[in-house]
Image (cartoon, rainbow, N blue to C red; front, side):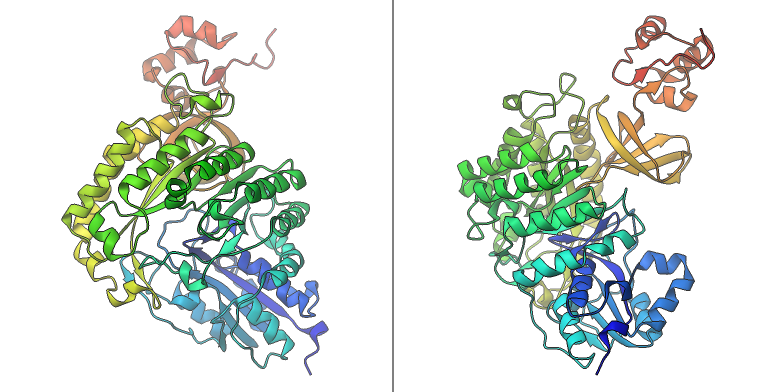
Length: 575
């Protein structure tokens, strides 16, 4: 008989990235929280659980002792979409095997890793199922497996899916894990689940493998936010669903009342939250039920925080690819959905909502509340040279119509068992790699830069940019949220801090900014030079002639309006 009061458990978070679930830092997914809650619910004391991220194990070899000494090791991870990450590096297969080899007790692996493992976390790859030398692999829900495994005395479990009543318990009991995340409390965003599964069956996607949508009650999600908020979490993302607009309905039709209960309840229990964003919104929902969708989008924009993104799974604007892969939205339909979201949520704080979408010099100096993000996936069945032209034409059509996209995500397919693409694998993606790279460069140069200037014109203020790393004499950081802008700031600044930033220039997928407001009496040469219209010569004149009493005085001196970027503090010791 296993003494649960003495059972020692270590959870290792190798990070996840699914079509409707994100867990690479600064995100923490539901997996470690729910699994910890399940183990505690089974009778193991909270104090007996140790939580480490894979990056912690890389940085501190001493923490491997917790892997070796545990009676039960649970590894949580898996990437079913390709991506590039700044805040953390997902575990590679060899690292996961090392965990299994090091574990002195029973080992359990779970999460989306159950769908398959590739040689690397990248697009244009094929995967296969692999136990990576673990004693047990959860082929159902890993949290349910952990609960049943502990109850069995570590003898085994039946693969099953957990239900919403269990999540009600486990979400609360496992919330303590967030306090052990190295990013806690300031730079951590909790992924929240509203539903799993999808009614549609696109050829490449693993989300339908969870079945049709199963929705949690608003009360359940709100209570989870309340518990996490009490544990110090101030940033939240409703990312674990295939379609936020379908929440609380039949899986397809929008339910604005459910969204009102959900968002209103979150704001009630966490009135001082720093971030409330979402991820997936199905464009076909917007166009098939436009009135209900508009109402739901207005509810979201009323309660969220600026810079939010509704990821649209267009995947391909090519009708041939759409037909062969059972994609559920055409280019024309997706364009209409983009227009509707722009009209209902493309306003910026401080503006008249009826004027959305706004951009240009007259726009308020904040990011819009909610905009679409377009997902384009390559290597699908039926892809041809014309596919790339169809996609570029769609993006140009959006720009030419005066609309905005928060970002364009271009990927190559990963083929998983259980999806239709498993029969094709990565053959098409690999055959088109050269064409793909050329096309991706063209989109970045011809679309992304212009769209970014429209989205965040010079002078746009980005509050609370977290400084993450140094490169080429600059400091880079991001806000917390869904697909946050990467911001480069002149000079090497202390990492781990947050600063408000004003945008001064644009790259393809990133912006240059200066601290906001920039004190012209103490600003560096690099900071002053970065301001539009100032340049090196005028920046040098500013340094020579300061101090200034106000930006207006400086404008008279150099002929450049700095009101959007600068202030003038009285130098210390001056009269």
